[in-house]
Length: 400
Image 1 (cartoon, rainbow, N blue to C red):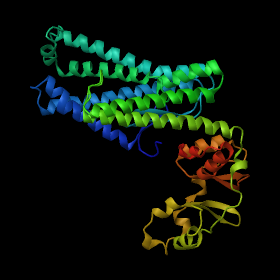
Image 2 (cartoon, rainbow, N blue to C red):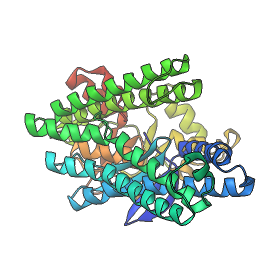
Image 3 (cartoon, rainbow, N blue to C red):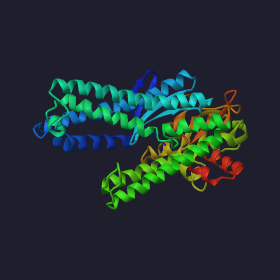
Image 4 (cartoon, rainbow, N blue to C red):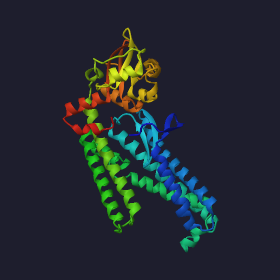
């Protein structure tokens, strides 16, 4: 789901990226604090202080979200699971753990440590905030007036505390793929000794909670006062969006397990295309388009001379140059050279190719044996293979 984005760097050797959707929620949180929450509590603060503390609060909150995901990732790595990266996005963050846990116990630990981290952070922020507030004369009596007298940092800490606790509690909702849903799956997995069946039940729970959120959101949008949630068009629409997103992720999570179960011990050699059109490096881009791409279903072409693989040229490579340069530009100028290609071997498991396609955000992989190109395996090939072998056309919706 999360391809591309902005790379922030590495923390404990794990890449941290920001998806474009993150900027939307970051701005929404900052605007809400700077224009709504803080001015209501502190009418005398002024715009600069409101915006400064609002910005700092948003940064610290998303730093807390990153800590939540790092907890997942570090425990996963400790348990021998590869973790590619963490991505911050519209609804928080996600750790890209590349393999399913080997046991229910590992699943439970990885899932539980995230909410636990958020709740611990929330309690720490809350205790620090209360301690600082007491030095500023906060007693709890006449709450509204007492809160209004708080300084910027105690206000910041007292906002960060409950919001982190709420984040931890929300993630404990027993609907896959939330952390609570993964805890549920680990328990069902231990009881049934069947990961696929446990995922199916946990995904059903995730869909049920998703539809419940959608129903509550619709009610709120229509002006109905819902206990705990309240009412209102904006809040209702936001809850509908969260419900839809949770339901969609639950379906995708189950499809992923089904896909990996169907692939099983299948090798790349069983799925790859052994017959593929190749092109020379010296032909023009215009000839590539007119003679090879138009009227063909192929969207990637090995670039070869004398059976030697020089690189791979794709539609994405063509899109990078203006149309008026197609006649002069040569394929060798736009292709991805051999040394930069991600390749697999015929003996690799199809599941490994599947994960590589997703991780590298590419549509096809050259299959190389003894430094010779022997085939190509693509997302489309794997989708078709899965659909034929499983009889499930909905697997095309899985993130391939």
